[in-house]
Amino acid sequence: ALGFSIKAGVVPLHAWVPEVYANAPSAISGLFASVTSKAMLFILPGVSLKLNIPAEELGLFLLIFSAANMLVGVLRMLTQQNLRRLLAFSAITHTGYLMFILSIYFIFDLPEALAAALFSFLSIALMKAMAFLCVGVYEYRLQVKTIPMLNGAFQRMPFNAVCFSIAVAGLAGIPLFAGFVGKWLIYSAAVSTRDPLVLAGFAVFLVCSIIALVSYLSALIRQFQPAEEDVQVKEEPISLWMKVPVGVLAVSVVVLGILPSAALDGIIQLVERIGFS
Image (tube, rainbow, N blue to C red; front, side):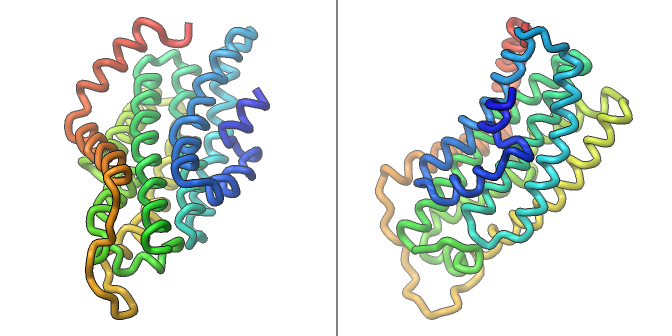
């Protein structure tokens, strides 16, 4: 359990996350933040249950430490100006979100909670990968590494700015994007339990979501502000190798946000057939 918790970036074993994500190539950081670390949260329960750890004890562990992840991640986000570190601490917060909804499943054996966790995992993976790729493009073409340096980004790279805005808006849980659907599913599962401890965890989830929104909007709005220096307004050339992956991810986030039913139906069928038996 300790090894999986380290790989997932569970607080207080999270110190490696901002250092690795801030210095690795953007494609690697995106892969780690979107898939590799989050997948550990689904492997950990499978191993724990096979070791005869009671599901309720596992759920209580996830519930308690989810609050720590959400709070540590979001509070550190508020102080970040570096874009990669902002996304890194955001990843810690999203790990907390997934731990929270998984805890509900294991404590109450609620299939809707597992479906919400899997949908949230999918949406976070798409949005986080896209965000890191867009930041990588900014670094490569404009040498932009901090939030203040984003001024004028839309004028020079409108395609990348729009895609980054979709990623950030989705991570913030703004409607019409996949992140909003994931958070709504978490809300529905949490409220349905009517359990005081779960509702306390949901209160932390809600507060952290609102606080994170401030950091996300700061990065998003900066792109559309004029540059502080006079620059020639033109789109920097981006190869198709950069545009296609980012564009596909952007479309996926929007489609999942507007038409989530197809993905949800598939996830619900998967939960009914497999679950964590």
